[in-house]
Length: 116
Image 1 (cartoon, one colour):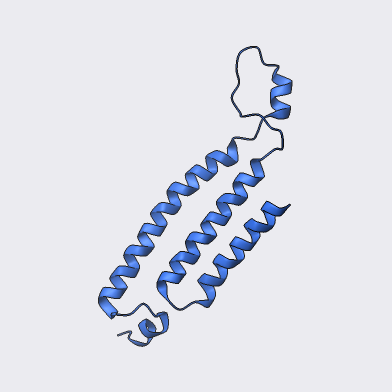
Image 2: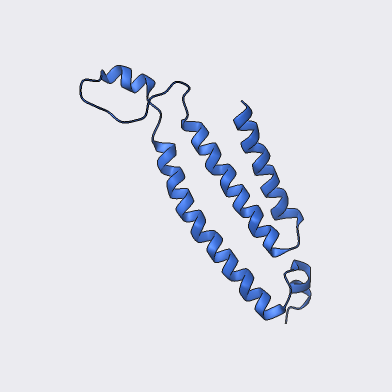
């Protein structure tokens, strides 16, 4: 129960940083925290207390293996999510750098005011 609460708290902190902050770097950090919270939640979905790794070896009973093994699908989804998240964060950082070069500020409201 506690890990789920931690994942929820991380998600709320990330969403707060995205919505309430004006600094673009803090918004990017909020996106990263939200991504980490979703990855943690995906891993928690596949966790089984006392579970065995999802590696089938010779001589194992298939029914016992199916009943006790950890679900590998959330692990695969999390690895995919990490790779996609890395690309998204790199793109966001590149956009923030270009905005800083053009406007000379990282404040969201200043950039909106300087539109033209």
